Image (cartoon, rainbow, N blue to C red; front, side, top):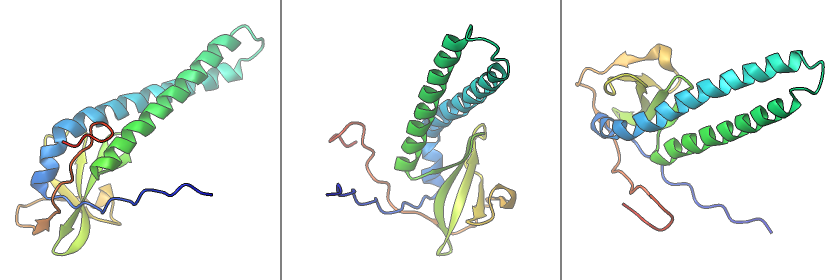
Amino acid sequence: MPTPRPHAAPKRYFTVEQANKMLPLLRSIVRDIVESAADLQRQHEQLSRDGENEESDYYAEERLSLRREVERGAARIEELVDELRELGVELKGWDGLVDFPALLDGREVYLCWKYGEPEVAHWHEIDAGFAGRRKLTGKEAITGTPPRPIREKAGDMI
């Protein structure tokens, strides 16, 4: 018999203020993702180079160790991306591009922030992506939903 799946939390919509208040936490998580993704890319390249020069099993143990590091790194990135999802935001690129669902004049859009930017200052239509980013003017009628409590540990709410 299949295990029942927990109900998905209702989608959260952010105001610009709510999104900006989350940035200290997001900077930490996204920095870890960006750095881990870069490490993972280097490790993949190393494995590819090593795989091309497999004349003997001399480096087999090193390759195995590196493969394990890659697996651990990929699992860590997955955990970090899950943290972002739990917060209600979406990672859109390994360079640290993050979208916050928002409502603009009653339609769904994304507030857009990229790692390294000082604040959330752009938005785009759902299907426009980064190329369709527009600067926030402060005149947009962006609405959100009240924040959900964040779980630190199973059963603990803050």
